[in-house]
Image 1 (tube, helix red, strand yellow):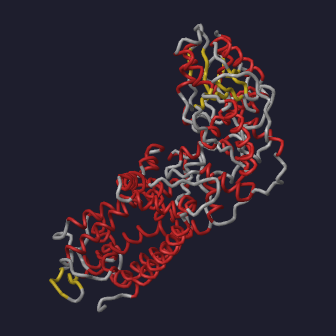
Image 2 (image 1 turned 90 degrees about the vertical axis):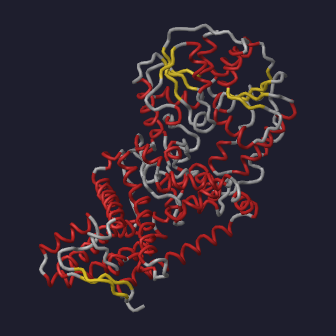
Image 3 (image 1 turned 120 degrees about the vertical axis):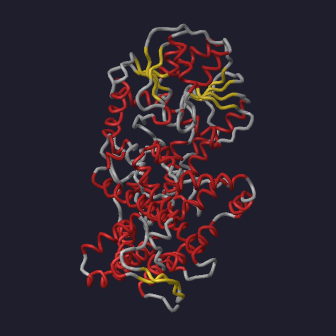
Length: 614
């Protein structure tokens, strides 16, 4: 401890505090996992899942591949901080090992190496060059971060995140760390350049450094020489140590603020990746695994721009970045939890891959007011079905409210010669997904059980629905063993391919709108397009497939008013009309109604254009 300096204390205290908090959080969260979840994690360690996790950590946590795809400047900014700082620490550690020949030295010597050891510019070039290059890489990133706050649009973001106090403290400290490091190392170089020095390490003197040589490499040495020329000798001698204090304090403050700020993602994203690749997922009810997801959010704000609530309806402060923030800090309100289309656009944009819609759902479930036992008693034993056949058709509530789709499906079934059992032609029990999306999980389960009994009773082998909302819940929650579940677009495509359905081609240009639940929800993009291509010419809007816009009338949003829905619908209709197509085709009864409200173009369901082309 002969060469211990007090200025290292802020760094030491901050580092120990950070380590203690991280250990506490990790132990508590991991202990909160179910026994099966822990088994899944440990079983995955000796498998390829670990290699996948390591690859994902490199590509996303360090290189930020997904953010580069969003915007190159934004990608550079994030990579410069993550990869640049990691390599700077790694290079410093290797340099210390080489310099001290593997001797065990205090950690603060690694961190403040240029204070304790003066790497002569003319003789010790390699490590200093690498560290200066990495420091410059990071400083450019700091400049871009400041620029983003002023002109975010130039970096591909119309809006940036509004931060809480903890975020601002950590952010300010982070921005100070690297300029403070440059200043401290440059002041040491300036002092050596002007007065000379001694290369030493823990009391072992080596040789004198004459004035006019300095230490460091191209960045710190050049800056140091410039400071030596302009600063008076007294200021130079008195100012070196305060600069190292500033650097140490910036590190210490950042480490103390980190666990309570957005930067907790640095240490949470890595275990999240391992757990996710082990097969863990968030479910209907909140769990300890959810904490790994909420704290892995960096609040980068990339999810804000895709949100149509803000872009088209002017609704702010409810986007996923704010939902995750408020849930993490235990201050989530119904306004934030309920006002979401759950369209999946933000989830698709999230560079961390957080299950935002699932977390919204289980937060609603946790906050839902219990309902009476008999509220949905009517659902038990309801059977208004008609006909018999191996193919079952479940229209769903919205299709029943859009009778043209129902009539179109009647014509299609008749033309194909298929024997069909109609589950709810004259009404029936809802699929249950709207209730599930509102957080009433148990009530939704009652409806699901009733429908499962109905399907089993009639022995169908294929279940077709025109509603993507019904399709998704049938596939994800019903566990219909022995029953193939198809959307009507998939079913119609299969009939045409098998020659059971003959359609005549036309000359109309159709622009297709991907429904959220069908596309991002169930991954069905090609089947509707294949069918449209048989009937007319397919035109794609600017935002399509996984980037398609939501119609605005999602049953998942239980807070938005009708005018807000209309504004979103009009915006979507305008984007579709901009293609110059003659008509809009969608594959969801809810989307058809929403787009038609704000559109002068004719809007059809896929089944309608098929029925007209028979």
